[in-house]
Amino acid sequence: MATIYELFGGQVRHYRQKTKMTQVQLASRIGVSVEMIGKLERGSAGASFKTIQKLCRVFDIPPNALFPAHGLSYSDEGGVLGDIIVKLSKLNEEELVWLSGIIGKAINHP
Image: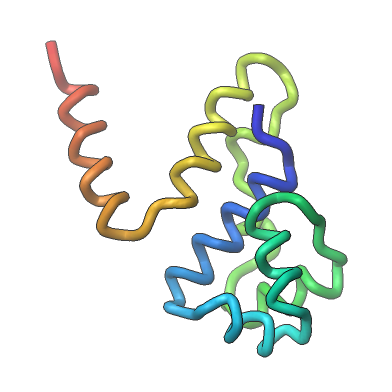
């Protein structure tokens, strides 16, 4: 089951890639080390409220965008979805488009 750190980190990675920033660029813009960005994205460290505010300013998003509504449950029924969200957050845009097509076909398959 994905932890809140992993889900948060996946969102940070998603928005960083969406804005076409490297980890070095993001670290510089919010005033943390590149190592810290890596830890955040891997879910091995948490962020302070101050860091969350800076991330939101850089990405131009509200704070709740970094905390996906699905997958934050620690019950068994939320665990699989959280794990999927973490895995999806590691894909680039091209891979997401490809996977979206597969999912669409699988859902519409008789």
